[in-house]
Amino acid sequence: MADEYRFIADAMLGKLAKWLRIIGYDTLYFKTIDDAELIKTAKQQQRVILTRDTLLANTKKATRVILIHSNYIDQQLKEIFVFLKEETSTLFKLPPRCVSCNVELIIATKQSALNRVPDYVFLKQKTFLICTNCGKIFWHGSHKKKIDETIKNLGFPKF
Image (cartoon, rainbow, N blue to C red):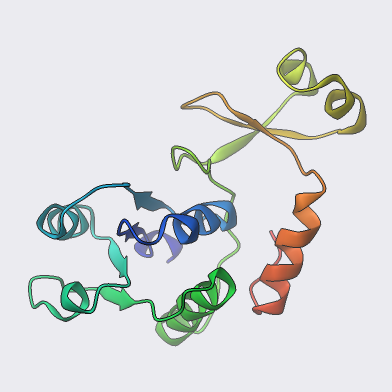
């Protein structure tokens, strides 16, 4: 089940956390968090720890850890997808999450975006997504093509 793959990323993996949220994975990220608190949160919330820290990855206190080897986001995502494929033999198509606060985005009415997005965007776009927590509004702008291409190249289902 997709819900069992919830992540918590250490301070070195903010960009990876953002990408995982875009794809739809529940991913906690804190700019500053010590290893003990990271492990405690992971255990309490049954999250897989994502880290580049070999000491953290090898500690016996942490039970589910993915040691990320690459410095590059496309390769980091590939490492996650390899893990998911090995664990589940399938990849899930999930609703996207807010890149700021990790809450699932919901489809918003076009009217709800009025005066909250640039006029050009309001006129050009038909569909908007909204975060029910922070209220940010998202739309499929020109960056969506690049995101889709990156995900496709990694063999992940298009969202």
